[in-house]
Image (cartoon, rainbow, N blue to C red; front, side, top):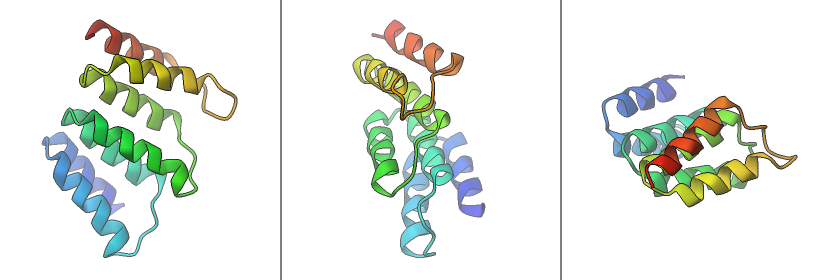
Length: 120
């Protein structure tokens, strides 16, 4: 919980790189396993720092470490793509959510995708 809290504080203050360093430290130094909360928090920091490519990399790690993406995971990365003017990626992710294995899109998902398209 303390790593997640510190990463959230980094996200709020625009220090996305520090949040990514804490994610790395939590696994490599503290020996914690990746979990969806830590990855979502790191993606949120990337979103706020307008680092949509880094958010996509983190999102792709979720299944690689044996986890399932949550609607929060999708919503965060869709929003990050929107901030980065990557509307095509945002729409692809929204489309992915409509598949059976993914969580169903909610109003946040649709609004994030719409916002991404507005910024195009």
